[in-house]
Length: 205
Image 1 (cartoon, helix red, strand yellow):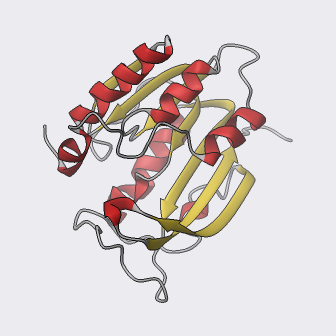
Image 2: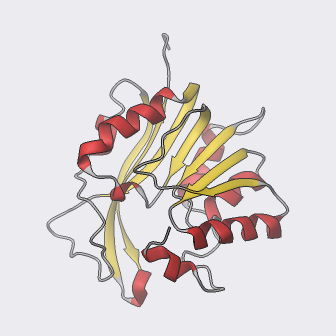
């Protein structure tokens, strides 16, 4: 299985760096591993977030479509002296059959076609334990933001607030829309991202 990121990840340098995203710290704050916590990183890239969670005591499973990214995730975990169950899978085809306490994904959901989003998020929700979190970010389109110079044909359109729609029946713990600068591809540009942390409650609060 090969995709565009296999080439980007096939060097010694870490394309996205080794530092975790800000959502990792937010997750650690809201659901610290004071007991065993199972966490899934969807679209783990080269493993910077997955390894951060493993270093902080979470039981981490992670997958990505790029086999080179999965190999670097394993390498980064070994360097950090932690364990991450990392494997190759296509997010659009892979479905969960076991439960997790936290499902995490950043910089990946924009590859999900509109026609399978409802079914995919339902699968994730059904396989989340009570009081569990979904921690997600997705790029959204804005008419005043130019497309990124390294924009990909495989990316799908998302609009502001769409991600939150899938969590109308969960408690929204955190939600924000941010415009930020990016240097991917070596050319300065901007992105707009919706970030959400939603908690599952089946009973009364």
